[in-house]
Length: 231
Image 1 (cartoon, rainbow, N blue to C red):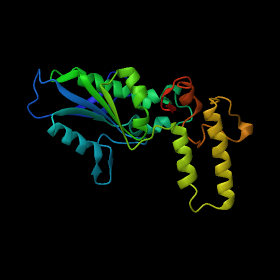
Image 2 (image 1 turned 90 degrees about the horizontal axis):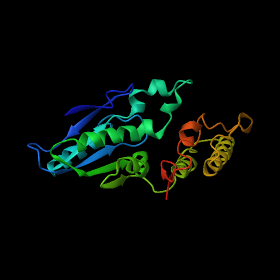
Image 3 (image 1 turned 180 degrees about the vertical axis):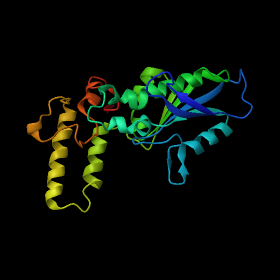
Image 4 (image 1 turned 180 degrees about the horizontal axis):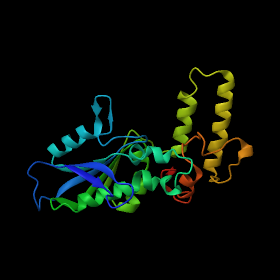
């Protein structure tokens, strides 16, 4: 069933509600919110001919479990996110994830055939790292993290850059990228998101380790169960 999340805001996104055939009031079904990883993912979290969340939703429905999945805001509003004068409120974990996971959760909890106390969170990649933050807001019955890591997210991205982003690079490029990444990582670990200056060459809002400007981290710098810190 086609649905719209946050329809009464300036940034609605499309989603799909999937549930067992014949579901009726009083069935008290379990339900899950399916959250995709980083990137401009569509509602089915598809890549080529693989439709990961569509297939998962169908399989869950066959097992008597309802679900909601949705497209990412950065897919729908990518042009606005890439503008130099992009509003600060669009550079947040809330805009990319938790505002919409909460909306999906509320849709499921309002269904007469779903047990409102049995709604779960399923997140892949970055969507999994954000699970504890989403749980603080929506209080899920449980969380499932797919293809993700319990390590701080900036450490994961750093390792990916160092281990996979230097292939076929010149020695000069490798030295520059490793040095730059080391400095950026220390800024993030120390919580000094707003201390990076032009004269340091390392400007967080331009092709940085984690891919967002300082306002993205400032919002969560004191929180220990969000995108930046999961212990």
